[in-house]
Image (cartoon, rainbow, N blue to C red; front, side, top):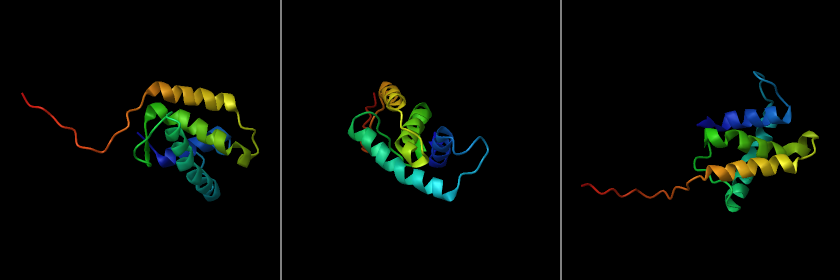
Length: 111
């Protein structure tokens, strides 16, 4: 699992704001943090990807989520959004076929 901070850092790398080992500015962290939930909500609404814990992200989905979030924020950083990259990342997320947990206890039959 990857943390929300790791996702924020990866989004900033995707945007070219920070490089490996650099620390993000508080303003950048705040902007990206405010964008993550709406992006994730949009993906869930469109049945592309549903996530459970807002502070943890599956490793398989991590890079695709970072690319989609970065694309969503591109204009704020003076970059033109790339729908091709976004569509590719969304198609990869669809392939993961994530299971949405109901939060209910699983019943087990003993033999």
